[in-house]
Image (cartoon, rainbow, N blue to C red):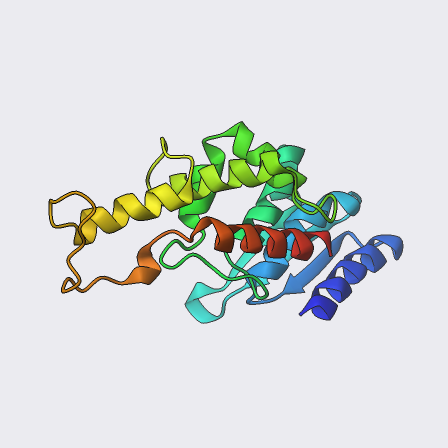
Length: 199
């Protein structure tokens, strides 16, 4: 996949150097869409068109126009968000998809700035990790909570609690994958996303 995406960007650069007005990219993969959106500023003299789907779902998207309509910070944060919310090489949050993370990102410039810092160096700062932990809590519907472990406990209590303090009913059938990740898992996920975006 990395080779395919790299070749796609080279193709756009070649089209610009050869004097073409358009670069037409066809792919069913959302990875290609987000990476083209991010790199469209590197080929300012041509229009990049992204074609996806087939039959009645076939669509052509003007990537250049879309990229130009976004602020550099937001455009950069979308690339990191795509990897964070699940791509070919990074795991996804069960049941969250892409729409909810994008809506959550749009609500806060602070989240956008944190996602912009992803991939800038091999190490992720503590501030970025804390902000992305808070973002994950918001993704799971709690905008006040800042720690995923606390949110996991709250959600588990709400689904399996017996009403007595700290008591859980083991007979209640509950899908654990619906809970947010624990902090140690989220930290490894952020590190993986950082590595992927850096590449």
